[in-house]
Image (cartoon, rainbow, N blue to C red; front, side, top):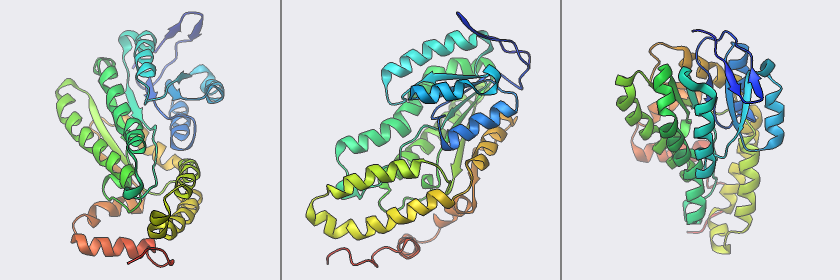
Length: 306
């Protein structure tokens, strides 16, 4: 692949040799997203990194000798997406996009009975609606470079765990869109891939748990009696998971593998728990339910009423 120039008015990046056209990434500021930025820059890519905070943009802009271009983007905002569509067109020109990696995500931790409409909508706006809309807007640039769309999904795209129903539902929806899109755009030379990580040590756990504990404290007394002990037990477990999971670099390496593959797999599963997920789908539902409750340690903490 030839050199890729970025010309941005007064801001410019010198031409440089890269493996392919530039890659757009959402959710680039921390965790898996930041690991992907580092991995791609180390491999010689130019990266358009979507972030929501100015301080993250400043930090990322100093990486890669100018090959990382931060873009202010809240994927749930139609106004942001409209602006990004115009920015990308000016940035990549006829070269097109070599990849579009959807990593921005939100994990809602709440019993189904405690989900209100706004919270459920927020979950889908970030994890599903934003990803689908941004892909739709940037497909012309991906076609130009015969690029790859990568959805960073989850083990939850295979198995819905209790109290993460909204999160799992969003990932199942994302998997469905991934399958449909993959078939639709294959004749155009665009590839579509799902990455399904298992337990990864990322800040999403700390962010989600801080928000979740505030919501759980505001549950009506009756719901707190039914679900409170299980929620607190799972919150403690998730906090440990956030510290003991696999390194985000493992996911980043798989993302780059998918971007560089001539014929990538439809799905890449990262971690032993992610690889186990599909097998849990083939056992009887009742047995799987009982197994999940046992493994997660639910119903042992004095909570719930008969």
